[in-house]
Length: 403
Image 1 (cartoon, one colour):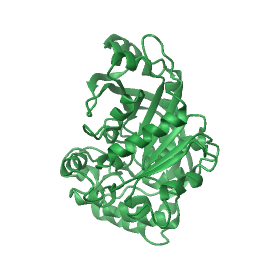
Image 2: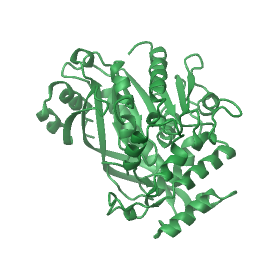
Image 3: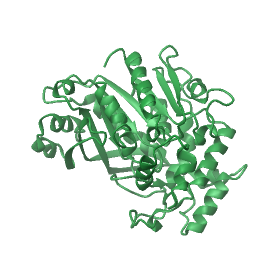
Image 4: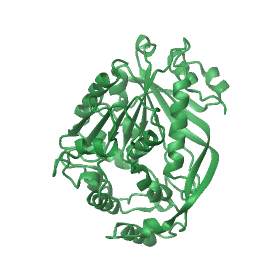
């Protein structure tokens, strides 16, 4: 396998050396400033060879939006067996896929050269990497770099600027886990500047489906991460599953290539997006009046695809990460609908309860939880985002014992 080129990315971020990037094979590289305005970033597409054991999906993608709606109705039905009956036995998949990444550093060059910890940011379903860097005041990327960390956000396979292969047989959670693992391993082997400053610590940060994916990486590869931050999760119970089903139903999913925006023309029918009305995003992701309407509109316009293969295989990602023994922070919006039915304090603090349930052997002394007041599922897009970011950074300062 060709070495992953995070060293080249970092070199460009610091010294703007384009030839180094091209020598390492990075496609469409560009340098930029974060949307928040306080980080130096470099982004581009890596071709990553990967092999994974996926699951056979036995049902074809619904060919019309009426049938898509019926699928989600039946998936949400009490005692539904539709999801289980759609999944068959294991099947090996392999290929080389383009994954779009963005590596961000502190803007100050001296601070850049002190960075030794990278946070791997994995977004949730129907979102993309911009969830971590929405706008000034709503950028976790900036919060992290101002605290002396580097971040690597990426568009999951099947979303954003990354490749969009078969949405049923290829884009599934097992393959996403292997892709994330490869990124982590290559981060650990990367140097972060032309002076070859080594990466010593990796933090896994995930939201919603991206949190489940991060949990699954920690379950299979418990040494990948030195610390974990999971946004938008809970101990999965039948009640929580019903909350999530209601949230999914509220999105009024449609075949992506039929979306009136035209942004998804040409994608296979197994890629879905939420409906065209903003209320399809608001119900499960937001809590009024705890968000700025301008930020809401910005995020609604950025909606992204969800591969049906991910929907079918997502439940398998929630197996407890029993072998992971590092620290964990669970950060939820207080009014998260997907995982708490709108009230994460009832009947107990659901963020706190998720730690022993999902990470039973995590370092209890260094683990913590937080409920962002007045926030829904998309914590980073709410007025309480800054408070959540402060808690996340404070957790890392204690959990890692220095950067």
